[in-house]
Length: 402
Picture 1 (tube, helix red, strand yellow):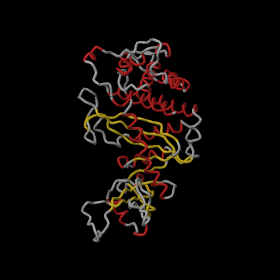
Picture 2 (cartoon, helix red, strand yellow; picture 1 turned 180 degrees about the vertical axis):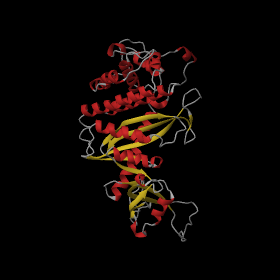
Picture 3 (cartoon, one colour; picture 1 turned 30 degrees about the horizontal axis):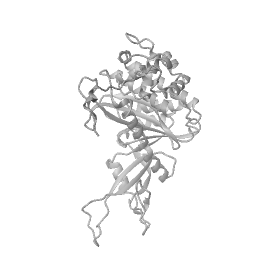
Picture 4 (cartoon, one colour; picture 1 turned 120 degrees about the vertical axis):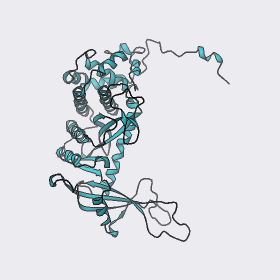
């Protein structure tokens, strides 16, 4: 069976004025209004200029469009289809929303950040399942990603650390072992920026947002988790000032290498590494993952004494598999390992702290969700307009997650 050549005359049209394509927006926007989204924008956002009026309605429209699946300004037109205008008020045309975003400056984006942080605190108060979860251990994860763009018209675009041309998005999430992550803070940066540049300010903002959401460092262990790109004295100092402990992947510098070399051969403990399996005949762990620790390790030894940090160095080693390894009866002369070191002041046991640090990968799923949703594009040529878009994407993510 084949489609007739008359297919070029067939058109699909959504023109029934009584239908709503995104009825699921109703409870989400009701939650947003109960959490005070419009009120917070009206109180804290001080935009001026053409298109800046009614910022509360326009921010709500941007967030609503993202919840409904919009990933660019033109997609915001879905809010005007069918009976959406009768179900919701304050709907704006895509061109109006685009003009509104281009009014943003650095200060206005920071104001919108404050709105997002306050909204997260309100959501925590409205959603009872979140409040009991802020006990035991609370994780604040920090990571960045390159959002690819095309063309040279967008401000701030450059080739980043992974040789992708675009802009750099820095994200901090808040989660527990039993609760889904929410976004605590975001920053959009130029594409050529270093991952750690200004990240300590984001971590401070994320920890402040966590306290606003009901996280009490006196009642819970707040753990800031980061990869080796954020292995800096500033990041650890920001974590401690915010009442958090730290767990950061250590760069393999001479001091770390010397500490690993000093670990006793009997100090390694086998662990169940991800995707590992047990040999049914011998009971051995096939992955050969092992963990040991250096009880006292001082990081950043070349910096002034006030900036040096003392903690534990937890090391995981995995046997390096090589196709050149002899087979048959002849065994390898010596084992070759890959080492992964984690610098932490976690109060947990060695194995608990190592497993918790591996859970840092949860932020990768959040970033993937953003990239497959609102952050599929950075729709404006203006840098601060795209920064405001990222903050709205974080608010949409949190509304859907709660």
